[in-house]
Image 1 (spheres, rainbow, N blue to C red):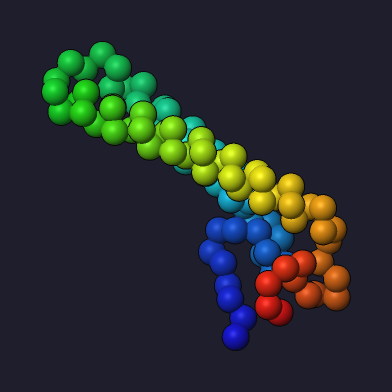
Image 2 (image 1 turned 180 degrees about the horizontal axis):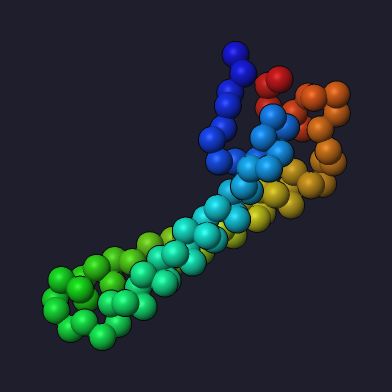
Length: 89
């Protein structure tokens, strides 16, 4: 069974996103959205802002993990004859 990804780069979807690029784009959008909350002193706005700050920190950790995986995969070289570098064909 061939697995299809919607967003991520694969041999079948070479124009897809790397995980780290996709997460960084989400992170960028969240920062833009958070900037609109900075002047709002309502408790609800502060709670949302605090939640978003925690999410941004988690995204930073996820981006670092994805970059590490990319470094590992890059050491293995490119796909050969359509076979994946790791995992079951």
